[in-house]
Every structure is written in C-alpha cells, then in structure tokens.
Image (cartoon, rainbow, N blue to C red):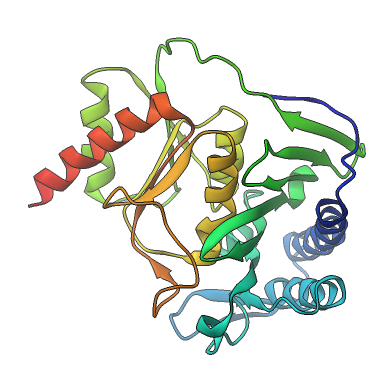
Length: 286
C-alpha cells in the first residue's frame, strides 16, 4: 500500500518526476488524438512490431531532457541505435511507450519505462502510467514513491505484514495463449485458488506494487527496457524478477538486449509458490 508522505528532497528523483510528467502528458495527448480517429502514423520495425508517432515523439523529448539533466550518461532506448552500448559503465534505459499494441487497441494500459543502470544492475526505476496520471519511482535501496500528476500528491510504499491469502493473483498479458501459462496456473491451483488478472505491458508491475498481482509469469521473450524498471521497483519492496533459470536479470551486459522469459513475484511468500510452479512447468516441457 501507499501512504501520504512529504515531498522528497532528492534532486534526481524530482527531476525524473518532472520529465515523466511532461512526457506522460505528451503521450496522453497523442493517445487521445489517435482514439479520436485523427491522422496517425504507424510503421513496422525490422521485427514487425509496431512503432508510432507517439513512440518517436516521446522518445525524442525524453532524450533531450536527459541530455540536459545528465549529459555524461548515455541512454539505451528502444527507439535509438545502441550498437556501442557495451562500452558504457552506466546508462539510462528507456522505453518511451511500453505497450504500443495496447495503445493501438485503445487500452489504457501503456507506460513509460525509465531506469538507471550501474554495473549491470538497476539502481533507480520509474514507470509512468499516462492514463492514470501516476508515476512510480525510486531507488533500489529505498521504498518507492507514487506521485499523482493530477493532485501533485506524494505517497510512499508502506510494507505491511501479508496475511495468509485466500487466493493468489496471477498477472497475464491479454495475448497469453502459450499452454505453459495454463500448466503454471494449474500447478498453483492444486494448493490455493488462483485469480487471473489480464493487463498489458509494464502496467502489470504497477499492479504488483498496488497489491493487485502477486505473481507475473512470462514465457516468451522481452527486451531489457521492458523489465529493468519493473525489476528495480519490485526488488525495492522485497520482491523480485528472475529468469526461467531463477537468476535475477542483469542489464547491458550480454550481446543482445533480448531477455528470455521470466517470473516476477511481489514478496518472499509469493516467491516460493512462483518458483515451485516454474519448476513444474519446466519438468513438463522436458
């Protein structure tokens, strides 16, 4: 849960909040323009995934703002060339519109993901949700904040003792058709009822912070900018995100920016359930 708190006095945190507030409004304006049926440019990238004028416009704005705020730190963005990235000791990692397909399907579940990578680890994370006028942000070593652009209200995550749950909430994408998801859920259902919650993009990480999703399995590839901010936020509250080998992701280290699948969990109680179910799925796949 989040409780009211005073405005933080951290320059980096406040600057990132300000950048994402302006970027969120820009993205929201683009979304309303698109939903109104006005002319809107959509292209296909090399992997046939869509990229829109909204992706590119917000990307350009955030790149400009980060260059002013932290000119010595490069940015690894989904929408830019990053061929020399492995020479970087630290970098910002950016997805200016995570959930482009949600955007194009007129679903409000798209986000802006921004994180700071140092020594291959996410040390600062932010996920903005334009349609809710919210941003979740904070450092790996501290509990995260939630800020409302609309009310200018700061709140901070408050750890609370988890009660024995009557059910476990599983987060799934709208297009989760892989049979492994059903196998995963059936294993958990042997011990405890499951509530399925479908949502798009990194919005599921925000739902985890809100206590609306306990476990988020993903059995198809993602990219580093899809998971870095979410992983950092989950780790800051005592949860985590691990590969299908049960190892936390590291960033800007491998020859590719593609991730394998992953399992995300909200806390230690969920971790055992999540990883036991993963092992069952892997055994069935052999």
